[in-house]
Image 1 (cartoon, rainbow, N blue to C red):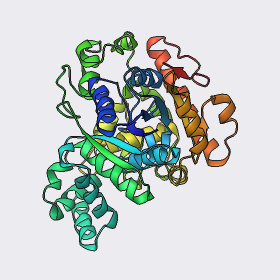
Image 2 (image 1 turned 135 degrees about the vertical axis):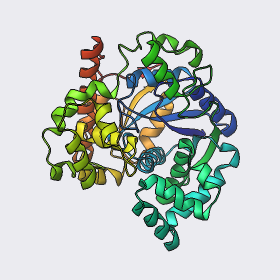
Image 3 (image 1 turned 180 degrees about the vertical axis):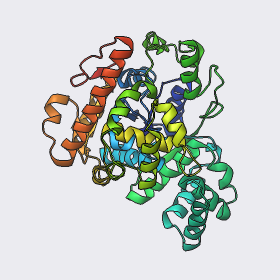
Image 4 (image 1 turned 120 degrees about the vertical axis):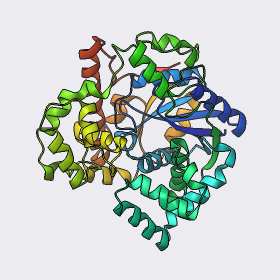
Length: 403
């Protein structure tokens, strides 16, 4: 059996995501599609607009066979660490043959992304010098890397200005860095781009989230008919946003000094100082992040820092979690896909949490510590959702979707 893997957020799931799954099947000729998906918090460092089980069910209704949850340390990480966590997860399953990712410039082929990935992995001395020079000019690390890379690959300036292309390079780099034998397949984005806010039959998740915030409903033309019923309760009054966590963030930050905040995952000392200085006056999550933002720190980098503070994820713990995949939780599977789960249980290099209460009780050490972090994040999301909308999530500790 040939199995393709996808690393995703589906925040929320839309027509472009179904297109990606369908094209993955067509191009790779795979027999099954396994998705490793972010949980209640996503890579931009903010809460997902809707419940992870809703997003998982949407994927299963539209062609995925198995959906697994990416643990928190990887789901809310930088593009580099997000990609590394996803690739480690798919490779560690031991039954996935090819990784399919979306890219704005997929027509260039995976070799273009792999060539750049290899260069970044090798990091020649001249490149390092250019990178440091751009950082010292006050650019963010991501911007500095893009500028330095463009000095060696002129086409990279355009290529790496697009978020899915950046992730494509990071996926290829992660495969090279881990020595994985995973093949790759690049699928062209069918919408106008990640940041585009135009709503239509083919649009970005950003556009859909914007439409929800402004109009209160998911635009029906933007999502597959099969999943529209899942979004009936998703309105401006129920969609979870970062600002819904503002008071909890205030409480979390009030417990920190600059020294202790700099121990939080991905929060260097200068950023810790900037955050605490701006947090001395009343704020919402958005107003705080915007006041901290500067040339050196992008909004997404700041959101991730605030998210890690909110969830209590430390740099020390994240460093330990990066070395291997502690576990993967099965969120849901398609009826008839039980053999894929069984195969993964036999071949995986880490515990697979299928029956959650039974399997999670066997975790020890770092894996048990990370699970506790994931469960706290889930409980926090559930509480905020309830306070905002009155919705009580089903028992997420026992739930296993079968579609």
